[in-house]
Image (tube, rainbow, N blue to C red; front, top):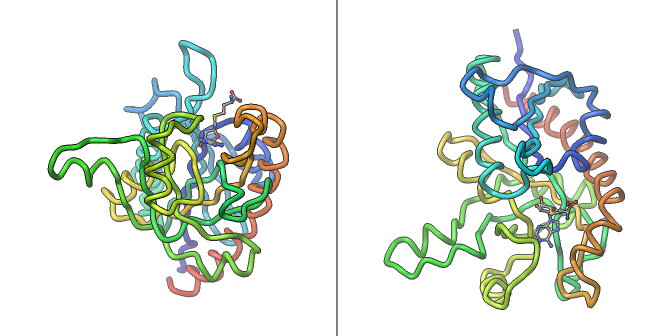
Length: 252
Ligand code: SAH
């Protein structure tokens, strides 16, 4: 009996995830017992020959907003991997960190562009000037090779850089220029770290809501473009899943 490929999708904000969850027709699933008091929400779907576990970071009970950022993303990734392994008795073929991001005019990005991560995930706000810890702080984790899909889907490719702030401090800016990153967001490197601990490849689908080097504030651009970006994310992710179904399915 052939087994369908299994892809875990990790998303931070409900507004980003809602269109994709609806398009997938994903059904809510119980998180593992150990995670029952965590905010992460799990849903499962079957799309174009691919089994999907969709996890969102969930709502912070104290402040009532989405748990954006790296801590909740790491936790949500662990919850989804455990759901796959214990609940479905499967090792996922791929984890995708899917969400909105900032880009740069200087790198040729436009609002609504969709990037796939290549060739790595880095962190720009973990400055630890101690031997060994500096490299740990930079993360520098490999991205799954989705280059062939990027071309077919009309996506750009770029290094994704993660930090826990929406704005860009001067220190962040210098480190981002040095790393060559073209996509700035708040979760991907944390998802990639958990994936690396479990030997599961991690890729990213990131839609540009704001241009960091624009005179308009990031927050203003983000709010204006969130719905458009969420729609682009949903369309690209569905098309990518269908292509992965053919590619990974043929290898199983
Ligand atoms: N004020 C917004 C919160 C948006 S935070 C609200 O409450 O609706 C930004 C989210 O989008 C994070 O999950 C992050 O991954 C992503 N993001 C988009 N643009 C970003 C940028 N320029 N820098 C960092 N994260 C960004």
